[in-house]
Image (cartoon, rainbow, N blue to C red; front, side, top):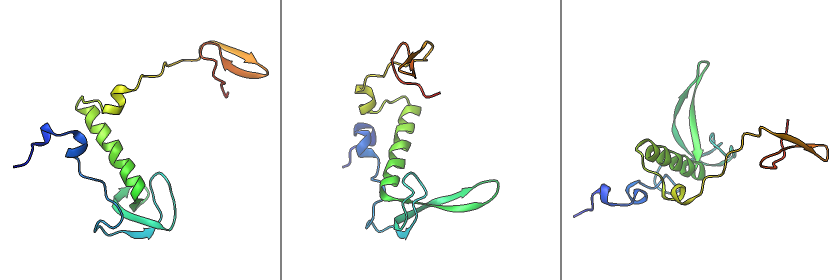
Length: 118
């Protein structure tokens, strides 16, 4: 008998993203997602429609994996479940850079001391 998905870790419940050599129709081409590499093994993800044209979207293995990770995170946030890695990480303090100071001819935030590029 199988364990219901509710009782399994979310990482186990999601299928692995597509990888080269997994039986999918991989072709050689340009990755349209994050890395934009050319002449790599890519997988057709679907069609994109813009006001001016339509086209096919292809992605390499690492970009498919990153896209799958982003979708999982979005699904868990939408369902009110924080990913384990995000729950353990302290949130960085946000600074609005309200007070500006000059140091050595460069502009810095007076509160967090970060250099500001204006």
